[in-house]
Image (cartoon, rainbow, N blue to C red; front, side, top):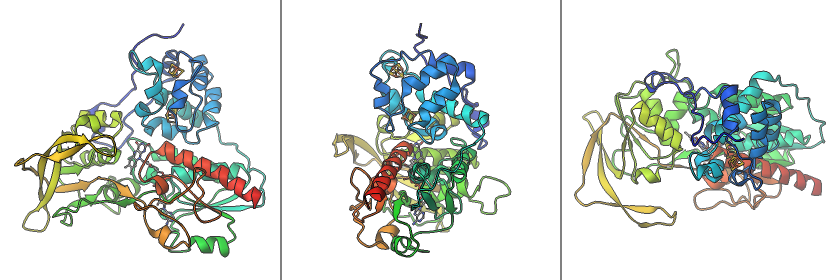
Length: 462
Ligand code: FAD
Ligand code: SF4
Ligand code: SF4
């Protein structure tokens, strides 16, 4: 008999007044008893609507049935058939718009907590099971993977398991992409990402960090001089956008990318950090996505007394994960909806003194299907601030395009591929944010896996 509670088993979460002062993980995860109890809410629907909402098609009822029986190793085996980063996805997937949005238990009450269960299973596995993977038998072919975010990690993992000799080139000094430089420790502990990278190294991955492809070597050189027969580009979309308003070059204005990279990758929050960052007491974050939430919550943890998120649409249109918005509000972040900055105001030292905004109202739907915000007449107002963080989106970096012969890209910079990830350059494949622009971890991972299968097919037909 299923557990017919209308509510998910609550996620154990550290109190806001404690967690907003440190970078330790906010949620502490289900215990085995809580996981079994929550798994009991699954009705084991034959047509698996939830699986249809998962970009990598995790067999959700099958893994939950194993959790309900208490066989967590079997549950992990089901998940890992299609997902290579379950400890990551269980934490950061926007489940409310993906798998959980299709769960029938959500019609009346809350959906089954699929993400929390996935996280539980992955954490249980990582704690219990030693990595004993043996090197797969080498198939005699060499592949290069550029970029070590979820797209590159998923692609490299599948290629290694097929027997390829894989070298991954990463521009930064640490592998993991946004998982290490963007998403903060309090949402995704870096040890989890590191564990995944170690697992790939145990399978034979060669990792070259501090290697900016397009600068130290081009893709043409990788293929023509270094002997890589096929290449995957998973370089993400790390080029920040600005609004083009007066004052964006004042002291105290950051792109969210720079701010988060310095906090997370360079560990600026640690007292002994060699690369500290200045964060003022009154911080304005512009934007409404996960990046804006992360920047706002990091600013609080760095000692800001007042953090305002300025977003030009209403609360209903916020693109950030619901859980992150909830946590940000609990921690004291203030939201200024239907507001748009028009100028960053300077003090006498060319530093930020405030942000002048206008009020907005929602007009007709635009191309994205969301109602377009339009400016309300005579609605100027000023928010006092000494730090401004722009989190209004990013684009793919043009470096790879400009240094590779015959690689087609779209007007926003995304690499053109077919549905298998093949680019206009034979043997060169791409996936993740480098193709789509800023998206999600699971979509990037799915693209990496699709491309790995296509690279293998290409090599067999060569
Ligand atoms: P990335 O993760 O960006 O990795 C690309 C890697 O390529 C980077 O390490 C980069 O240094 C490297 N690189 C770039 N150029 C070169 C080069 N020329 N040579 C060598 N290496 C290169 N998604 C979610 O699903 N849930 C969330 O909660 C969420 N939160 C987010 C929070 C933040 C702050 C950000 C920035 C993004 C968030 N996202 C979230 C989006 C998600 O992280 C991305 O969609 C995903 O990481 C894209 O993966 P990727 O592998 O394509 O690129
Ligand atoms: Fe849901 Fe993400 Fe897991 Fe798929 S990978 S089942 S979308 S949490
Ligand atoms: Fe279980 Fe919900 Fe999926 Fe049905 S839709 S199998 S109840 S998780």
